[in-house]
Amino acid sequence: MTDWQITAKTIYCEAVDDEVTLIVYRDKPARCTGCKKYSGISAATASLIREKSKRLKRPVRCEGENCLRLSSYCEQILNENSGTDR
Image (cartoon, rainbow, N blue to C red):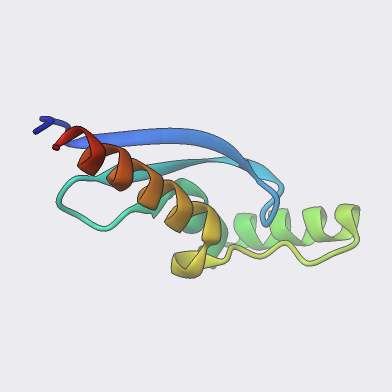
């Protein structure tokens, strides 16, 4: 059995047009740094989202906990881990 506690991977997220870090914990739910950044209600965040949406001509919106990128990476890591436990 492996002794990992946390793993992370930085990817480009098309949903928010930015690089985000996907973090998978061994004993906690996985999370994405972009979710916190792009789900905030601060004036700076709202301004950033408006600017990106206008420039890209499409809505810039974080998919939150339902993000396919996060769930795929989490599944990949957990499958790799279970494969080494055999």
